[in-house]
Structures are given as C-alpha cells and as structure tokens.
Length: 327
Image (tube, rainbow, N blue to C red):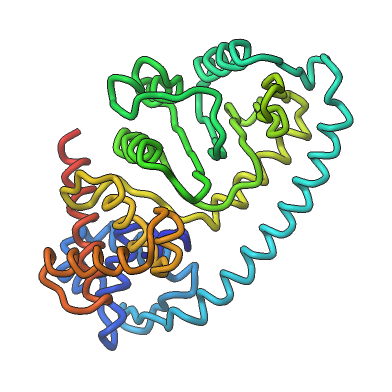
C-alpha cells in the first residue's frame, strides 16, 4: 500500500512487521519477514530516507508514525505536480506556435495510417525505455488477448525485446481496455494510474509523440506532433516523472484472479486507495467495491482492512519471489 511513496513491497513488509513492536534488529526482522538480511538492510535504509524508520543504539530499529510522513510527502509532491502543470501549459503554447512547422525539431503527421506507421517505427527504435501517458480516444482498437497484442501493439514488442515500458493510465477503463492493461502489467510493463493531461509517448528521453486531441473531432483528420527539440523533450520528461511519482502503481495479480477488474481492485487496495477512488477507476459503484473487498477478505481469512493489507503485501512478496526464482 506504500508504493506511491516510492517504497518497494519488501520495504513495506518490513515496515508492517516493525511498526507494531517497540524495536528490532535486522536479524529479527529477517526472521519475521522471511527476507534476506542484506535485503532487510536495504529496506530499512529506504524507510530511513523517507523518515519512516530510525536506527537506535545497539543495532535496533524503530518504526516512526506514518501519517505525518505521508502528509509531508503529499505536500511536496503536490507542489511538484503544480510546477509540472505550469510547465505543461508553457509547452502547449510552444507546440501551438510551431503547429504548422515541419522542421527537424517538430514535425506534424496527418492521417490515421501515417500516425500508426510512425508509432510502430519509433517504438521499434527504442533502446532503453518508452514512457507513456495513456487516455482515450484511441487511434485503433486492439483485441485484448496476448495473441492480438503481439500482432497489433508495438509496445508489446518493446517488452518482448526487454526494453523498459512505463505507462500511466488515465482513470476509468472499459472492460476491454482493463483486460489489456492487466496483460501488459503481467508482461512486465511498469504501470500506474493517475489523471494525465494529454496523450504522450516518449522514447529514450530524446523523442516525443503527442497526438492532437482536437483532431479526434468528427470529420477532422487525425494529427500527431513528433517532437525532437531537446528542451521540449526534457520538459515533457519532467512532466511525466512528476505525474509518475504521484500515480498509483498497478501490479500483476498477487492472487490467482482471472477477472481483470478484480486484479485492478487488488492493485488499488495495495496502494491504500479509498473505496470511492476504486469505484471511480473501475467505473462501478461503491457498493460493488465493498462487496468485492468483503469477498476478498473471506478468501484470505482476515477480518479487518489492516489485516487485508498485510495479507496482500505478503501475497505480492511471495509472487515476486517466485517470479525471480523461476528466471
């Protein structure tokens, strides 16, 4: 549930164990969490940097109260996001001013086929990382199956090659998009969800593609800007990182869920989302969310939301450890 703070599942598991007790050594925490001592030390260092744990004398560690730390981090990141929004408005003005140019720095593509072709070509050129803001409407529909994505989605090929893919999805998913989202998460995409200001694809921090939202109006040709100007791409990368830091991580199912909405429910619960936020993201009512949570608690044999959070953290740690061991 602490992933939005930049805390790994392992570090969260250490905090969950350490918080209820007075103090503990790294050896004791390793025994209680079944995490290797060297990893426990890294987790404690991560918690210390965020102000969630402190080292006492005699090698003892003590957890610090979570609410005050979260308030401070929230204020800091809201300030960063506000600065990023100002930068985005400035960038938008630059793009509008250059919308009719065909220079090397900014190029305008017109038409569905030209955009799809350029997207495939540019994604295929990625060497290190692709960063994406994802929101409707979409240029093309793709079947939400592994076979369909393998044939139709250039981003799927990126993951096949081992290139990193980070994507922030705008809240609110229809059934097909949600299923596709979970397939990408299971494939290895680093996925998060948060309101995003626009559609965006960035490749290796030196090129950006920005579809024009106005071009989606009926009777209008689709348009996309390809941006190579270093300062503009740097500003877009900064905007992406600011939204990424405040977004909610989406994980591949920690449990054996087959319904993508239930998978998304698990992801949102692990980040501490409220029932109302979960309902908004999944496009369902709050009553349905609470019913699913009750069913999940019955399945895991827990009786409180706190116990449910700890159970999900443990399940995700087991899933991650099993995945690493099988490589």
